[in-house]
Length: 474
Image 1 (cartoon, one colour):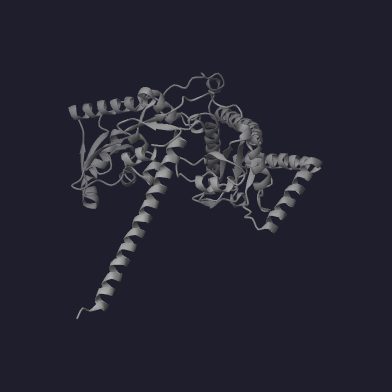
Image 2 (tube, one colour):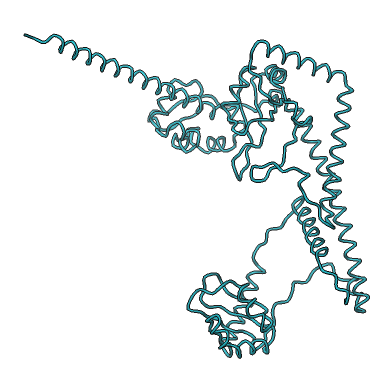
C-alpha cells in the first residue's frame, strides 16, 4: 500500500518552499526597485538646475567634459553614492527613464538633456534659515520636516571642517516664495529657554559647553576686561533692540498669531518641533549687523592694545634714562628692525657628546651641564647617539672637559673638545643652518588673528610680571 500521509506531507513542504522562494524574490525585487529609485533621485539632484547653480565642483566637471558627458565612475567616488552602490551598470539602469539626464550607448557616461539656464534671482526669497537643530541632523530629516510646507528643492547644512559636526543651523530652499512664508509661520516655534535673539550659539570645547562665568580673571588681564566690556556693550545693544521690538505692535500681533496656531496644532495632535525659522533676508541683515559689531569690537580692542604698548614703551624709555644715558637711540631709533646677528666664531667652545644609546632630550643635557658651565646651545636630534654642545666661553668648555671622568661615571657620556678642521666644519654648518632657517617662509598672522595674538602676549607678559617675587634688596 502507498503511504498517502508521506506524500501529502512532502507535497506541503515543497509548496511551502516554493512560496518562501517567491516571497524572497519579491522582497529582493522591491529592494532593487527602491535602490534604483534612490540612485535616480540622487543623480538627478546632482545634475539639476538648483544644485549646479551652487555646486562649483560638479559644474566644472561638466564644463570640462566632452559634450557634457560625465563618467559614471566619477559619481561612484561621491560619499552619497558609495552608501547606495558603486555598480556602474546598476546606475546606468536606474537612469534609463530619467527626464533630466541621459546615458550614452555604452552605459558608461551620463549628461544633462537640457542646457543649464541662468541662475534665478529670487533664491533668497525662497530660502529660510533654521537653527536650534539637533546634533544628529541630516538632509533627509530636514526634508521630511519642511516638506509639510511645500516642495523642498535644496538643503544646506554647514559643518566644521575639523570635526565634520553640524554648526547648529541650516538653509532650506523651497520651490516658491509662498511655501517659504508658510514654513516660517508653521515651524517657527523656538523653546522658552532659547536665546531671544537669533544667531547666538553657546561656546564649546571638546563638545562641552563653556560658561563665561567659569573664566578666571587674573591680575593685569587687560584683554579679558576688554572682552567683558564688549560683551556688556553687545548685551545692552541686544536689550535695546528687544525693547524696541516689544514696543512694536505688529511684532506683538505676530507672536500672538503664532501662539494661537501652535495651540491649534497641539489640539489637532500634529508634531511640534522646537525650531527657529527665519527668512534668509532677515538672516542676511543679522549677519551684516554682526559683522559691523565685530568690526567695532576689534577696533576697540586694537585701541586698547595700542595704549598698553605705548605705556610700555614710555616705561622702557624712563628705565633707560635712569640706568644709561643712551635714550637718544630709543627716541630716534630706526623704524626697521635689523635681523639679530648670529653666533660669532670662537675657538674652543664646541664639545662633541656621544653615547652607546640614544641621548636624552636637549633640556635634560643642558640642565645637567649648566650646573658646571654656561651652555649656549645644544644641537641634538631626538633618537641620535651623538650631538654637539656650544658653550659661552672656552673656559666653560674646558671646565666640562676637565670633569669628563665624573660625567662619564654619572651619565656614561663621552665628551670631546673639537679643534682644527673639525671645528671649522662645524662652524660652517652652524652658518648654513642659520641661513636656511632665516630663508624658510613663516606663516604671518593677519587681521583678527594677529590682533588676538598680540592681546594674548600682553596677558602672558602681565601674568608673568604679576607672579614675580618682590626682592626688597633690589
